[in-house]
Length: 133
Image: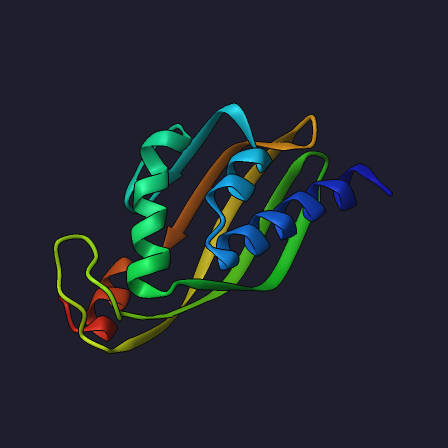
């Protein structure tokens, strides 16, 4: 398997762990000092894990891979992100409303683990669709 295919496989396993709501599965895929940046903040896993937990448990967030492009150890991913706000999250009560949007993430893979991850999504559209804007 090429370096690019190995890097894309790491990203696919990240998506699978995220969709299962498996923090241990995510932690294993991230380098110990992985830099994680996104709309809701940045930091190491222990700082970001509570944010991801609220997205998964509160919004039921799921990622569907639409495209992966790799060059060397870098992977660009395009997702369709969906969810339904069924449990309290980020200080808000659930609305029962659903959302769907396009999300982009950029990964740098080192030694078979995610070293850096950047995420971008239309958080304003998400908030409007969930009825919390």
